[in-house]
Image (cartoon, rainbow, N blue to C red; front, top):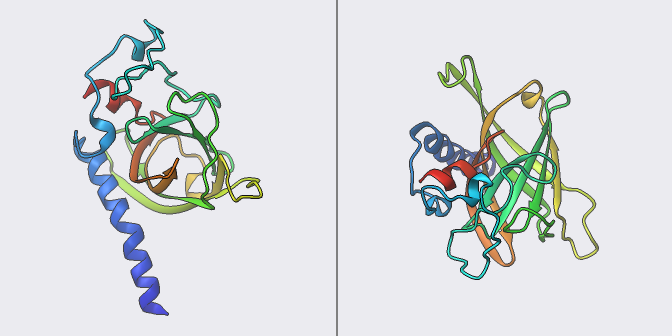
Length: 196
């Protein structure tokens, strides 16, 4: 049984380390979502043409925040979004699965989302020390077919947290599997899309 636990721990911490390196180095182009234009007028709310006819990574006509005022993390080439909302008092993290425009809920057939969370302690970007936490967000009120669009989990490590970096190890939306979706809270990962 110990070897299974060791293997599981190794599987959980490899994405955590990879995600931490992405955030520490600011490595552009390592994830599919980095293939975005430098800036677009729509990304900054200046133009809302809703031009969905050419879907090749240039859609940024959605809000910077999700419908629940949470951090948006684009999945793939904006195939979908995950919106994260933290209740820092209780350490409860909610995730909502949204469509490519971050408007409508999308149900996925997944019992839970696994997150590798890195909390920075100390001065803002100095990273004086870091705590690593593996969190499971379980489906909230799944439908009879096992699908859900809302997930929730709690960790005492998130109590009082204002910011953290995280990696969703795997999420499957519309039959496509996406691994190691990295984001920062409360920023999300939309900034990477707008400025690369």
